[in-house]
Structures are given as structure tokens and as C-alpha cells.
Amino acid sequence: MDAYTPTPRTQVKRLAKRAVYDKTQVHSILDAGYFCHVGFVVDGQPYVIPTGYARVGDRIYIHGSAASRMLRTLEEGVEVCVTVTLVDGFVLARSAFHHSMNYRSVVVLGKARPVTDPDEKLEAMRSFTNHVVPGRWDEVRKPTAQELKSTTVLALPLEEVSAKVRTGMPIDDEEDYALPIWAGVVPIRTKVGEPLPDGRVLPGVPAFDRARFRSRSNEMG
Amino acid sequence: MDAYTPTPRTQVKRLAKRAVYDKTQVHSILDAGYFCHVGFVVDGQPYVIPTGYARVGDRIYIHGSAASRMLRTLEEGVEVCVTVTLVDGFVLARSAFHHSMNYRSVVVLGKARPVTDPDEKLEAMRSFTNHVVPGRWDEVRKPTAQELKSTTVLALPLEEVSAKVRTGMPIDDEEDYALPIWAGVVPIRTKVGEPLPDGRVLPGVPAFDRARFRSRSNEMG
Image (spheres, chains in turn purple, cyan):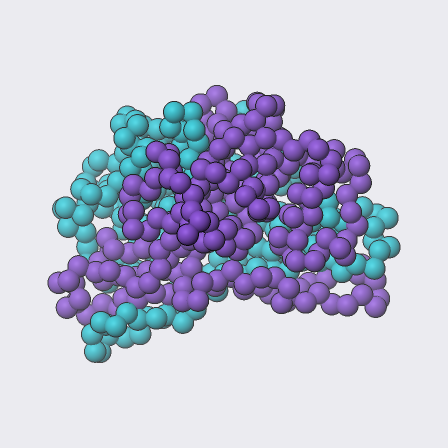
């Protein structure tokens, strides 16, 4: 099994039975998510900003609004935490205390570096687009030099990585099973709705097939 | 209009037209979300952890795994960033550059304090439970003294707060509207699936009605 090595910073301490370091599983969570939360520090204050991302091999690329404030702070690289969370179900127990969620989350720690090489930057942008809709890059107008210049992309190696996964039914205290309370899992599914064209799609352009979005749900929730 | 006052730390600089400070709108986003991402700093490294939360008036409560590591660091309060993000739709433009997401997000900065008063702690736990399923608290076994003791709850005032909201169609460069490319919005909806009882629900206990989960979708996506 190819796995990430836990460090003192990524060793899951609480509910360690939920810890996952296996690379295949970590990658599958990263590939199922559509956006991440990026954490960074400015003057001792943490900031957490949602933004797009894509995995390319053993690296993730992030972009967007987080980057501008970060990069004003540190040009040579910035300590970040990138977290991807997929929520699969509500876990309703017989006691308030044992209520929980079924989820899959990945936490990546490390130093993100700005991507300056134009080829790598273009490849990262291709990944952002195709991460959301496979094949979309080939259909759309590619970025101009000016657009590339005005886009900030950061690369973060997948080295210091951990995941946590909870699945399955609630676990109640044994005596609580005698209580007449409904308990179980209510799955949460992310559904893609009917595509809504803007008013200016040219005649003859085929409708968008929403089946092109990858499913991100776990089987059971 | 009752609004949060932007500070240098919460003034939205990038895409300022998406900024929202109105309290009613901020609260409605916080009340629609099911989990948040908490950012905190240990030895200069930011960490971002998903966890449950609830809003009570002008305050949010958080709990869960984030707290333990944080509280080992600072007993008297800890600088945090709590971010809630709801994704409403994929925005597919004619150019790669103008692809976007429709979303609603709230960022709260400040110092979280541990909740030690037993009454406030119990009230926070009631809020966590009812935030997910209204009325659930009254149905389940309440926390024991030991369970209360082993739960870490943090309170964070809603003072330094900003939100960003994107809605509506892609905005393409004028000349790109001549391209034969589908463009528009693909809504994302969070659907609650059929409740799955665990194997030990007593006979006569009514099935769980999934309509009890609040809808969190925007109308259009």
C-alpha cells in the first residue's frame, strides 16, 4: 500500500480510527471535490478562503482570491493548509452526544509556491477547467497572455497529507438502544440540476449534458 | 440596513461587487450551512478543519476535533477564522478564464473563547443538534455530565464578518459571444436521500421524515 507518512503535524490524534493515509484513497477524495478551503496566516491571524483546485499527480494547484492577499505577504512561498471536505450523510443517534456526520476530508500542509512558468501555469488552468467538467478545456477559448498574467496559481506538493473518513451507522451507548428513538443515516447527495443556458448561446450549439459532471457521492452516505 | 462594519481585515478587496455585510444576509448563509471550516495557527502553521457549528444571535458556537489541538495551545482564547461556504452552481463561460462558481460564503474573524458555563454549554449543544434537524433535541437523550465535560465548545462573536456572494450567469468578453460554445449555469443542489434506519430501531418508532432538513439551495443555482 502506497501511503503518506504521518508527521507530528498530520498524525490524526482524535478518533484515530478514522485516519486515512493511503494515497489512492486520498487522491480519490481530492478528485471528487469541487472546491477547497485554503488557510494562511497574515500578522498572526488565520484566514480560510474557499477556492478552486485540481490535483495533478502528487501536487495540487490552487488559484483565486486567496492567492492575492497571500502573495502580497510572501513571494517565495507561503505556509498553507488546503482542506477538501465531502459530506456524505447525517448520522442521527439516540443521544445528542453521538450525533455525527459521515464525511471524507483531506488536509494538506506545506509551503505553496507561485507558479511562474507559463507552460506549467497553462497546464494548471487546463486542470482547473477539466477538474470540474472533463473535456471542457478543449471546447472553450483558451486564456490569452494577459489572462494568464492576471491569474495567480499556487502549487503545493502532496507530501504532508492526512485524511479522515467516517462511514456507516451511529454508534450508540448500549443502554440507549432500548430507547424508542429513530436512529440511522440520512444520506446527502450533491445533485446537478438542469443546465440553464444564458440568453446568448448561438443556434445549433448542443445543449449541455449534465451527466458530464462526475458523481461525488459515496454509495451509502 | 443593519450591517457589519468592514475592518481592514474583512474589507473585501478582490471582486468587491460580491461583498455582503448585511446582517440578515450573513445570518441566512450561516443558518443554511451544515458545517464550517475552522482555521487556527500552531507554531506558525495554519490548520483548517471541518466541524459542526450553530449560530445563536450574534455569536456562533463551534465544536469538535479542531478544538482539542487549539485548546492545548491557548486556554484563554485563540485567534480563529470560521468560514461557511455554500456552492450553488457551476458557471460555464465561453472562455476558460471566465469560468466560475455561484456560491455564498461567510468569513468570521476573531478570538474564540472556550465555553465553560454548564448552562451555556448545554444551550450550545442544543443549538448544534437543532441546527441540523429542527426539534431533534427534544427527541433524543440529553448529554450526561460526563458527556458535557468531554465536549469542547468554543464561542465566537459575530463582529468581524464579511460575506461574498456570486449569483447569475457567466459574464463573457463581448467578442466571445460570437463563439459557438454552450454557456450558462449548472445548478448544484444538496439533496437529502432516503433515511436509512440502523438495524436496532424499536418497533412502533415512526420513520424519520427527511423533509425536516432545511433546504439550503439558492433558487437558481
